[in-house]
Amino acid sequence: KGRIAGADTVTVTKNEILTALNKPEHFILAIVEIEGARPHVHYLWKPFSKEPDFGVTSINYNLGNLLERAENPLNQMG
Image (cartoon, rainbow, N blue to C red; front, side, top):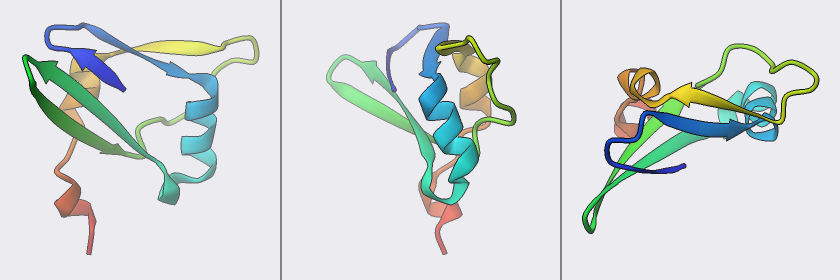
């Protein structure tokens, strides 16, 4: 998900959430903040904890909350 620096939210689709929950070992949420020409990438393993309601197509998440949980990808690989 790409976000301009200073954005408050990031929109995630229901399909992305379901994929993350059903195949957590294969899903990493990458958030890319763009500042000028230099991107900054944040990675979240197991970013979601529950399925969205039946009629939901997407959910807006607080970007700051997601970024607080982000980690360096090298910390997760072994």
